[in-house]
Length: 127
Image (cartoon, rainbow, N blue to C red; front, top):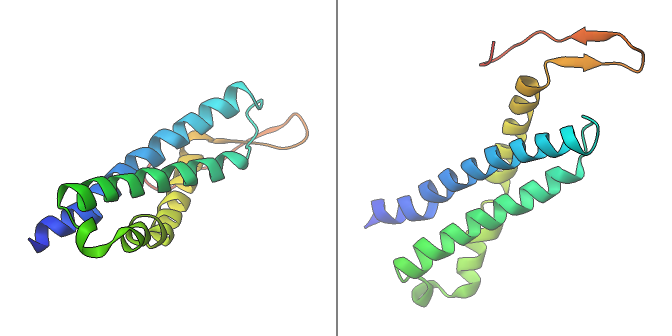
């Protein structure tokens, strides 16, 4: 029972949140490319984090609360804290790491205010 609780409360929401982060970063990049003339627009980060929190929380409540019927034992307030408040530091760390990795992978060129383009060195996993 403990393994099932661990899977439904932690592993499944982490998987869903990771997929959501990757998809939202790709959508952010595509929107910046088409709408904002390839300039970074930081408001998208807040929207992506809010969307990721929503996906994590919904997954936690549906699988842990409703499928395992833990809402009747713990209550809605405790379940909401487990779903939306407690995972916030994990989501922020995951999103920050993924955003930096994605930015270094997808933007290999650094442009200054003049017409000179400076190529950045690739580092990390994507060489």
